Length: 69
Length: 171
Image (cartoon, rainbow over all chains, first blue to last red; front, side, top):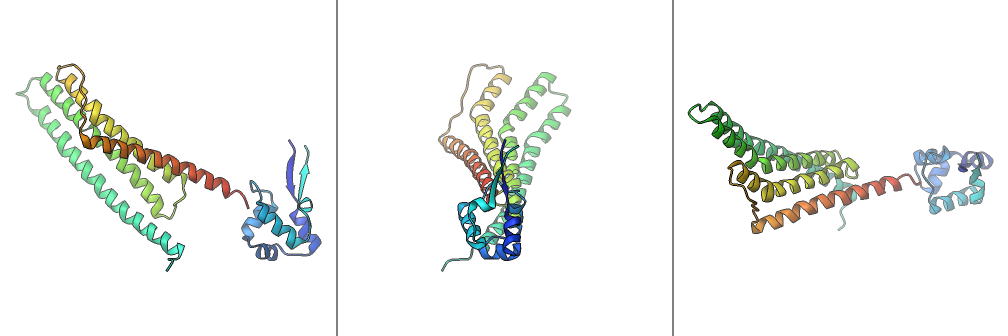
């Protein structure tokens, strides 16, 4: 089964942004951002995704990727 | 003026802690009442050698049957005590706590069924009268409905906490 992989670390590195600053910017806790980065969440809200894209100046496709087995 | 949410929650927590103390008092009171109404008379019957053994067994059986609703209500209060313990610890959205509320309703429902159906019929049969008896007092309808609703509310709370847990998996 294919699965969604979160590429937030790559985007943070590309934008030279710290996770702490991103969490603060989009208004979620560092703990939740860490869970999101490690893919340990059931899902991501459209609202959070929009804020992430805005902060990282990217599209959802840059953050989320589908990986086949 | 709106009261802050934290204040509301800590008030609810304090209320749950107070209610938990009352639940313990109720448990002890029901327990002692069962002890004095069943265990002690049963011991008195057992040591009463003037009474034929058959009558002794019948009387002890009647005592046990008549205290069945109280025993079930003891279970109901005990389950509510556990639920209040969770709420007192600030665990308002726990699935365990809402399951305890549902179980309390189940016990109360069983107590009402025992009161209406089981106790009158078993009393008849133990006394060798036979037949079918049903004890329906006007207040029993209300108590039966109340117990049923508590069981339902517990299940609804349980479903709501599951939904909340599910939502918390989303960032």
